[in-house]
Length: 279
Length: 159
Image (cartoon, rainbow over the protein chains, first blue to last red):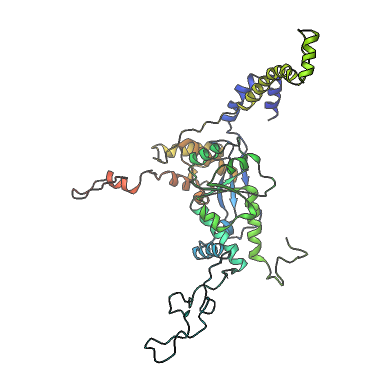
């Protein structure tokens, strides 16, 4: 790297011919190897994935990353995945449908005709549910909330199962970082097409602050490519997008957060209240 | 404005009175000369990186006949000369060696081990077994059409 810099300072014509050669013969570059920081239980062995790079079309094998088996290779519990996906869809739902009962419809307090003698059937009010224009007997009543919470461990397991399924079906890609050479959305779409990623790609970075500007600009111009921070990863989005692209920092964050729940004590009070020693 | 211009004209017919409108016309010539110079240098800087997408590769893979010898030569290059005669049983525990071998074979044969099966590659034997399996890009219908069908079975795939 230093030699390239000095050549650039010294001459202008030569490094333009030297740079593509040094980039093309990138064989003896150090591979990016990532080992699991958290301990792996004895009989299980880590799962692995290629570390790719977004800086060039052909940089598909920059390193090898080891992934924790309890997160990326759990039992494929599709029932838990279904529960979590349906929960995500429904717990925010508030249906605002409301109909009027016979008591709320305007009018209908008086008996329309006497009980006996008129020959017509007996009725007590003109707004009963039998009547045209009457109230609805068992209709939707007011804003109804479909809020419910699955246990925290079920939701965590849903995330683990979703990651497992993505890796098992070859839809998970690990990237060293989300840096692009241009902010052109066309570059991202061509890259995804060349590497056969799929129609929709979910890019996950660690935090909102340190996202490279090129990725933000490129993704904001595309509808099927979405960029989220690691905190925003959820099972529904993983199922909605065909491919999932994680950075190495994101993987470390996810492993740490998801594995903590396996060996934690049950809370004495909810976790959202302050704890002195909460990780 | 009209009075002042009349004064200027009456004094000497040649000189301009430098007022609002003629002054702008005088300086705008300089501004028009300066602008195109700046724009050219900026465009030159931006044109340097040119990224061209390479042509799409097909997913078809047919194992070459000299696969065993190719894998053996790659193993000897990566692991050095200290390779025992049973080179198929060499373990791929070490990350550097595994990455080196698998990346070399992928570049050589144009077909890489997918992420879901990387953890199954524990020994060189597993890698050889993986690369012995051919992969076709055709759909099931194309395979059926290409295979030997009885004469009373016709497949029309007109989509």
